[in-house]
Each structure stands twice: as structure tokens, then as C-alpha cells.
Amino acid sequence: NSSSLAYSGKVVSKYGTQMVIDVQGLSHKGTVPLIADHDPALRIGHGSVSMEDDKVYIKGIVSSTSSTAKEFVADADNGFPFEASVGVSIQKTRYIPEKQKVTVNGVDLSGPLVVIEKGKLREVSVTTLGADGSAEIFLKSGAESLSFRRPRAMRETTRTSGSLSPVAARRAG
Image (tube, rainbow, N blue to C red; front, side, top):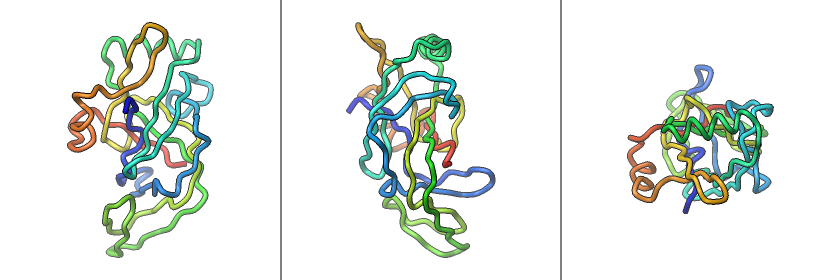
């Protein structure tokens, strides 16, 4: 697929708290805004969301004519290693106490941590630094449009080793 990883399903640390988003509990409207740094005023484009293997992916296009979008394209063309982050409206959480075990996104985890059991994916942000640390957003220039994709040669490496620039679940709410 030609999508970029927006959230790996892994535990992230936010505001000093370990948390994980249960991908099975996320809803979305199919197409979401693609913005910069979780700021709705900083429009870049939009994208279609898919969820597979307990991960969230986005296939997006630069559809805005804003200065933010133009700067993003210029920086990406210069090779800047952007990361992605999901913006989730939290609807239900569960606290897992220390030493208690829970399975989320197919992974056995131990508390203390917060599980975001239900939420609505509102947007995906392009960020400089994110919390997840698992993949990278690549910009592909096409004859008619710009779209995000992970090059085929890097796809499996990105998913399994985390050795490339990270993608983030920077904000869980």
C-alpha cells in the first residue's frame, strides 16, 4: 500500500504518563484533515485513513494552498524527516495499575499505563518530533499531485525495526 504509518499501536509517553491507543476502539470518518502540529489553522491537506495489523495508516494529499502546505512541500523536497502524529478525541480510558497485565493491539503490556479504549480519530498531524518513534512520512511528487508514501524498499524495515525516523502518536487527546 502507499500509505504512511500514522500510529504504530505502541505505548507512548505523554505528559509523564505511559499510554496506548487501542486501535480497535478508534473510529474515524474515513477522510481526515492533515495539519501541522495539531493546529487546525495550519492546513496541509487531507487523507484517507486505514487500520490494519493494529496500526493506523494515512494516504494523504497536499490539498491546501496555505503557506504551511507550501513550506511543508519545500522542506520535504529538501529531505526533512517529518514525523506523523494522531489527534484523537478520547471517549473512554482505563487505568492499568502497576504490575497488572493487559493486551492491547496484540501486545502484552504491564501497568502502570492508561489505555485509550475508545476514541475518534480527528486528524493526522505532520510534526517535527513525535512520541511514537516508529516510522516516517515521505512526500512523493507526482505529475498532478503530491501524496505521502513509504517507499516500497523501506516499508518492511519501517514497520519492523523502527530504525528510520519515527512517526508519532504525539497527542492522544
